[in-house]
Image 1 (spheres, rainbow, N blue to C red):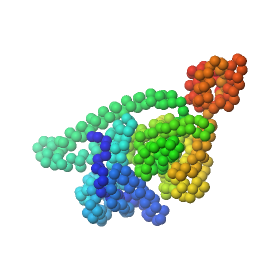
Image 2: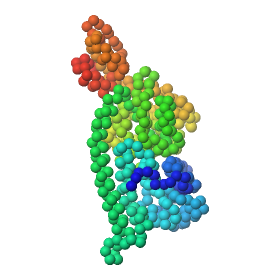
Image 3: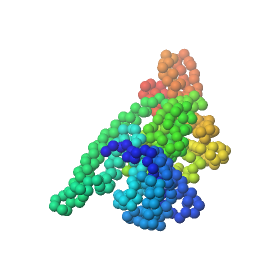
Image 4: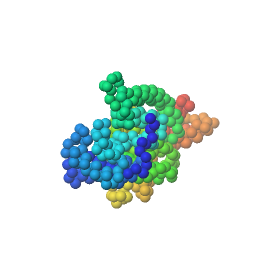
Length: 435
C-alpha cells in the first residue's frame, strides 16, 4: 500500500460541489470560491477538468448524497464529456461512493480521497510520509468491499453463508490492520526523537521566521521575493509540502532564517489532521510567524479563521506555545489585485504587500526588525580584554548598543534573544547580567 497518487495524470475529470445553503449573491459567491478551491485541488494532481458545477442539495440522501434527478444529470454529464473521474467536494460514506460509481459508471473521489492523493504524492518528511500512509490505510480499510469487487467469484466462510470475496476481504483487512499497528509504532519512535531535532534546531545561530497561511496565499512567491531563491511557486494548491529554509538579511543587518511551510485548507479530513500538523514543525520552533493572507480572495476572512483555528489547536495540544499570537505578523498579500497597498484596510499587527510586484516588502522587513528588537532583552556584559572570541560572538548574535573599553576589561550593553543569552551564560558564566 504505497502513498503515491492513485489517479493517472491527464485523466478527464468533473468537479461537483454539493451546496446545502440558500444562494443569495453573498452565499453563491462563497459557493463559487469553494468550487474554485476544489478545482485547484483536482488540477494539482494533473487531472484535466472538463466540467465543474455547484449542485444545491435539498436534503442529503443516505444512498447517493444527491437526489435521483441530480444523479441522472451527473450520469448524462459523464457520458457527454467522457468523464473518467468524478470529484465530489464533500465527504462520502463508503456506500455513497460505491452507489455513485455504479450509477455514473466512472471512478468517484470524495474530498478526503482527493486530499489523500495530493498528500500521498508530495509528503516529504519522515513523519509526514508515515502519517499519510496511515491515513491512506485507515481510509482504504473502510472501503474494502468496493476495492475487492474483482474477487466476486470467491466464496468465503463455511458452507454457503460467506459473501463474495469475503475471505480475501478479511485477509486484506488483517494485513492493513497489521500495517497500521507497525506504522503507529514507527510514529511513536519519530515523536520520541522529535525532542532531539528541536534541540538541534535551537543550536542554529539565527532566529527563525516561519511563513504560514492558507494554501495558494502566495507564501512561496513571498519566500522567493525576500530571499532571491527559486523555490517552486505557482498558482497551484499544495505546491509546497516540504518545508524549505533560507537565510535572510534584515535592514538592520541582522540575519534570520526564513522557513516556507505547507498551506492550510478548510475542512481538512480528520484522517489527515495529524499528517498535516506534522509538516508544521518549523512553525512550533519559529521566533516570528508571518501569517500570509490572500487579501483579494472573497473568502479571505474565512481562510484566516481556518489558519488561526489550526494554530490554536496546536497550542492546546502543546505543539505550539500559548503566546504565539504575540509573535505573529499578518501579511496581507496580493494587494496588487485590489488597487495596491494603500487600498488595503489594515489594523495593528498587519502589513500590506504584493509579493509579485514587490510593493510593501520594505515595510515588511522593517516590521520584522521591529519585532526582533521587541523580543530581545537588554543585558550588561563584562569581558576580559583578551576574550576576542566572546566579543565577536556578541557582535554576530546580538545588537551592541554601547561599548566601553578599559584597561581592566570591556563593558557592553547588548540586546540578545533569550536563547542566545542562555547560550552565552552557559559558555561564559558570571560575565552577563540582565538589565
